[in-house]
Structures are given as structure tokens and as C-alpha cells.
Length: 478
Image (cartoon, rainbow, N blue to C red; front, side):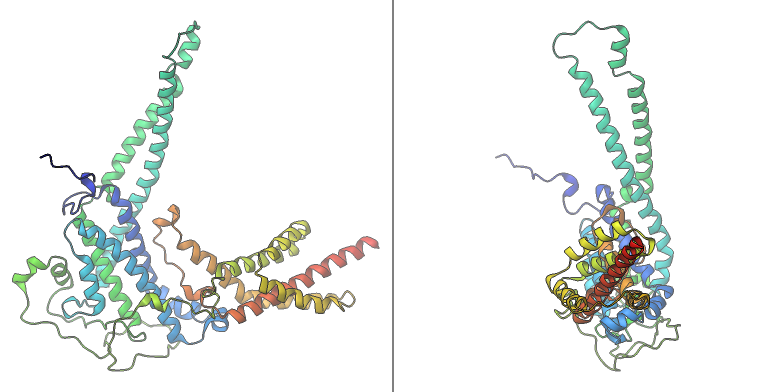
């Protein structure tokens, strides 16, 4: 009886072995690393201070979203945890290929299990490893672009070869020697392409050595696993005293070192013979390790003493209610309208009337039916008695629009940037820069307040455009 071989290629079987190279999965590992680096930078003292002082206290967030800092902190914490969960899931998938159960380790860490407690000193190790991760991600991103360039060169070479072989079919026409030399594969262009192809292959080979391509599963997974645990401990350190649902971090004085304890979790079989004399007891009270809140802005809503951290579904925390712009699915549409209104104001100020008219018509076409009806209703009342041309009234409209757009415009731009950061664009796949929070966008904005502000802006814009058209018409008739 002939045993049929599995159809999957060898490099896709599980497990791949601890010492096996990542190969093509280096790009998935680099994307997970870049996400961990982004979270690490978002949790720096400077970024946390910016979150508390700028994002949470901006006029737009205060008016449209909430002034409750406990609620805003919970939103920020939930977004960080959900993003970390996605990165940890990628690390766990890679860990399965080399026999490391990081998924179980991370679940124990989030649950606050006694055998998975890590103290905040993990963050110090992350700062050292972050430089190595940055180098690996940068080299892998460069490898991705160079491999795409190599693919284009190889495609061009195949086309030249196909043209050369096509001349061998059918009768050979009589040609001059110069024409034969020009059509042959040894033309100067073909030789230059071969040389460029050779150089590009050497460059790709060198980048494979420097990047994650030739890194073993064990090294890559171990590096990302420690980073993921360190980021989670950092989240607990910063948000734990204010947000329920997070396990409190242990004090720095522990019996085992951080790396030894994490190694035991990553390799539980080898750790059985070196088990400690007893489990580490879990503290139910708040942590004595306080986050570095150097900013003078107070944060209300400390977690009550003695409150236990239960299991929290952080994804449900990020579900915007129907009364918000994001809950109604209108955040991107409203952001686009507001950004267009900003551009329209700029065009009017620069005197580009034809472009402004086209932009205004396109903007009104994108309005939802409810907003369009509200704008028309307000304009209908105003058109009944527009009154004479009044420069002071027009200036009042401009001032009103500027005041509203001063806080509404940044939220619209942040909404578009927040959406762009979460797309699967290749250019952003390996970007490890800090990202915006959803609380800075229109996602959590009160729908009625946001719509009222947008209607006021559009009505004022229509009045400004009417005044400018009448003024230019009166000047032409003089």
C-alpha cells in the first residue's frame, strides 16, 4: 500500500523546529515586532504625558467625547491591550512552529496567575532589546523592498529570454549583421540588465543574513515574547491604579530574576526540576509601584482599594455606542466632510473661486441625508431675508467658523490618520512609530453635538461664499 504524502510543503508543517530559520515568515515576524515597538514607544513617559495633557484635555475631546478622565483612560488602556493581543497572537503562531507555548504564557500573564507574575523591571530589558528589534525590523523592511525590485528585474530578464526564443520558431529571415547583433540577447541593454540582476541578488543575500530571514524561530520568538510581556507589565504599571481589570504588578524584590521566570514559562518542562519552594502569592490590593506620573494634571478615579481585577473583555470596551459618531458608522464620512470644509476655507482665502465652487458642490454631495436636510432648513430661513452686504457680518461668520474648526478640525484629521494607521498598507506594515488613540478621533464623539457643529460650519461657509460672490459681482458692476 502506497502512503500518500501530505500536500503541504515542508516549510509549512508544524512544528518547524527551534533552530529552523524564519524564511518567508520573517515579514510576519517583522510586522509583529514593529507593532510591539510602536506600543513600547506609546508607553514612554513622554507619550504618556502627552496623552494626559494634550489628547485627553483637548477642547474637542472635552466637548464631543467626555471630560471623565477615568473613562478616557480606560479607552486608551483597552486600545493598547487589544493591539498587544494582536501582536501576541502573531508571536504565539510563530511559537507553535518551534514548540513554545507563548499563547498559554500570555494568557496566564493577563489573568494574573501566580506563576506568571512579572515585575516592572521587565521594561528595562525591553529598552535594551528595542534597539536590536529596530535593527531587525529595518533590515527586514529593506529586504522586502529589495526582493520586490529583484522580482521586477527577473521579470524583465524573462521577457528578454522569451523574445530571444521566439526568433527561433519559423523561417529565419535574411538580416544584416548589425540588426542581428541588436536583436540578440547579448545586446548592451541585456548585458546591463544581467549585471544589475547579479548585484541585486547579492544585495538580497546580504539582507537575508542581516534581517529576520535567517534568524531562528527560537531567537525571534524569545525576543518578541519578552517584549510582549514587558509591554503588558508596562501597561499594568501605568494604567493599573486607575483602570480596573488589570493585574497589579509585583514589587521589584522577587526571589527569581525576570528572565529566569520568563524562561520557565516559555520552557515549562525544563523548569519542573527547578521549581521554587512555593507559589508567589497574589496581592488583591493596589500596587505599591506607582507609574511615573510627573505631569501636574490630576487624574481622578483611582481604583478602589481591595478591588480584584477580573477578566475584562477589552474589545467590548472599544465598542462605540449607537449614540456616538463611530457607533453610527459615520466617523470617516464626517471626518472627510470636515477636512473638505477646511480645504474650502483655504481656497476662499487664497482666491481660488472656481476650485472652491467645485469643492463645495462635491462636499455637499457627500453629506448624509440628515445633515443635508438640516443645512437646507437653516439656509432657507436665512435666504428669506439675507439683508444688504455687510462686511462685519461676513467677518463674524468667518470668526465663528474659525472657532469651531480650531477644535473640530484636529479631531477630523486625527480620525483620518487613525484609520490610515490601521490599514494593511505595505508602507505602514513595518512602521514602529507611536500611534494615535481612538479617543482623539470622532469615533467616540457625541453624534448630536458633532452634527450640530458640522451644520453650523456648513451654513456659515455657505453664507461666506454667498457674500464673496455678491461682493465680486458688485465690484464688477462698478
